[in-house]
Image (cartoon, rainbow, N blue to C red; front, side):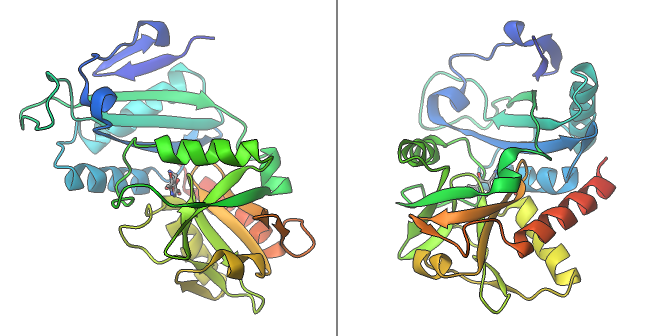
Length: 284
Ligand code: PMP
């Protein structure tokens, strides 16, 4: 079924939506993106995603394509026009179209594209079963805190994981896990401390990561922000990952080593429930 998508001010059937072949998003990955999850036809974590969008735009000296109020209205219109109950809204902003040149002109008009994806996210099978991850060298660029569309290396890692019969890869740099291909990585130590890497330019500052950390602290859980190795993760009590579209999802195997009894642990399960309840209550 054809969706209604949004391109530069217009709501169009997806077959009629186009951007220029000279768009710098297409030619140079000169673009940033965000994905908001939708549950019960409502948007989760809108404020956090918009704040991070501004951060990414600022870091790349790109102007905002419209106001935050307009962005919210576009999200709501797309959810309504596509009768979306559960899934996500993808948003991409590029620097705009210009004859190919590494240097850009400051007066380019940004391209803005949004589309919906209907998907079962609350009851997705991996939320129950957990996933198996492999380790891969983190060969991405040095500004992973900016949410750009340079997703080729993470895609290669995901394909490598699938080729090895697993689900995803955790990326490793200088001996420590940075994050997953499209998510933040966490472990639970044997004394019950929840550990995730501290924020820097090495990882994306996950919106789900921030919320889960807040809720965990509110639930009196001990949280530590520090790097950890694959070996520490393999001997941890539990592991899980966070992302906007998968919430809190258990990790049950790392580089061929099963964690605990190889099934999702209680902390990941509890945090998934808390996260879902809290974000549902705050959805707009
Ligand atoms: N790290 C990377 C590399 C990602 O692509 C994502 C998902 N966009 C995340 C972390 C998780 O971020 P969020 O919780 O904001 O979806």
